[in-house]
Amino acid sequence: MNLTNHYHSGFVAIIGRPNVGKSTLMNQIIGQKIAIMSDKAQTTRNKIHAIYTTENEQLIFIDTPGIHKPKHELGEYMVKSAYSALEEVEVILMLVNVTDKIGPGDRFVMEKLKDYQTPKILAINKIDQVSKEDLAEFLQSIPHPESFSAILPISALKREGVEELIDQLVSYMPEGPQYYPEDQVTDHPEYFVVSEMIREQILKLTRDEVPHSVAVTVDKMQKDEFDKVHVYSNIIVERKSQKGIIIGKNGAMLKKIGSNARREIETMLGSKAYLELWVKVEKNWRDNNRLLNDFGYKPKSDY
Image 1 (cartoon, rainbow, N blue to C red):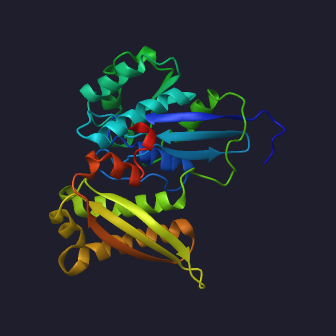
Image 2 (cartoon, rainbow, N blue to C red):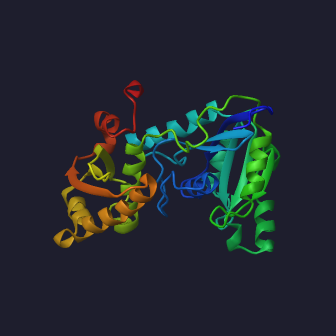
Image 3 (cartoon, helix red, strand yellow):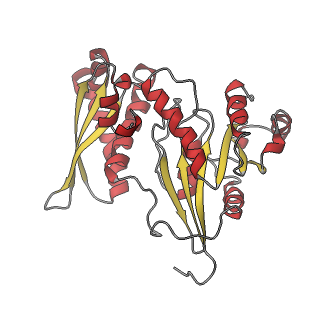
């Protein structure tokens, strides 16, 4: 890497209501899947660092859990995590959907952001789904537009406007070190990314029946003599009825979750994988601090 020029680096927090496309945008910028994507709200539970590196700059993205009114301990942790991210970045990137009116949730987030002196960029997502007239009308409805350093229309899915957004973010980066090696795209261990890929398939395949009462842990990953990766994972639910849904008739649902997740895992690891899944019931785990810590959602220092 050429470091003779001045190198610029820094952190970007992506924030917004649940389900506005934050993970989709981050995956597009990085060029591969880091954060799981689902059409359900609050898919992202942990702050995820994704790393975008070029010869002259490095942007480290923090994809925060969507800000929402928490209903349990896990929700409290997610919102606390989102706000803490705003304290440690060079730029705050807020995402809204042009297909939805600016609602109370967006206004709530915008009101909170006014208190931060950090440069703020508003990205208006899903412009591929509306007319120019609709976009113009939406722009008129943005409260306090002057509090944003820039307002950019984009389509995360189609990658429209994403390069311009990256250029805008880079313009706010100070001179700094290359924090991560150029080929590293996340700071999460493989265990975490693998567990998220399994959870993504559960969200996709079980639809509204088992939305957010599922946690996934990976207990062990090891290669055999044929370079095949063996993954041993637990799927944790809150009720016996949910366990039945995930296993499915004659184990059909669990088999489908496993085969879909295995393909994603093999793509990421670049090698064949064997995936073994167990389903366990832990009643009300989302309100249990010890279990939240065990499942990687809450460090012990938080309670």
